[in-house]
Length: 82
Image 1 (tube, rainbow, N blue to C red):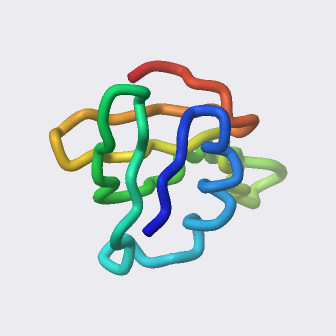
Image 2 (tube, helix red, strand yellow; image 1 turned 180 degrees about the horizontal axis):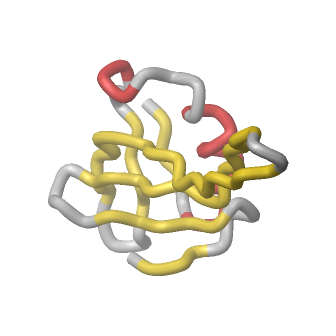
């Protein structure tokens, strides 16, 4: 079981980004009041056309919680909105 807070979320994103969405189990977000189960981690990407070639850059992550809430983070682990 992994429990993380907003202070450790950037480390968690680095750990979970290569794990398939259906394989994320026993990961919980602690908001200071209770633990919320994480159901998915989705990268937020921007696509660029550079001289006819497409490039993709990950600019953040969206963490889905079991209660329907989402946490949006920029690439530096800063909370964008919950």
